[in-house]
Amino acid sequence: MKSVIFDTNVLLDLFIFNDFRVLHIKQALIERQLDALASWQTLAEFTEVISRPLFNLDQSTQENIVQEWQSLAHMIDENKIIAAPWQCRDNDDQIFLDLAYANKPCILLSKDNEVLKLASRAAKEGVMITADYTIL
Image (tube, rainbow, N blue to C red; front, side):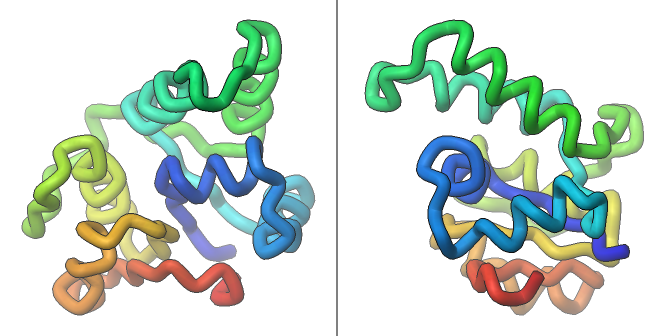
């Protein structure tokens, strides 16, 4: 089973926008064909982002979305996460890189350009960083 980490933008596609490009990924998550990894920090990041007025989600909807993601994700203990040797210029994205590094080999699915810039360095450490939804 593939271990996969989804950054917040990908989670938005999965749970808010219901992007047709990720329907197969959501189905694979529901069917437990992927080992989706998350941490309390990545969950907090997602929770904070979906609470923004931009998304216009009431509290109950936000809680349901977070609960759905949490039910599909394998929560990794923060004590088992170690700092990745590659640093992202955006600190909010570093938590995803650290989670991936601590759980290699894995795939980090991200649409963030700052994260994607680190793909070749991360690949040498067993972490595939990609924006390609068809990889799964």
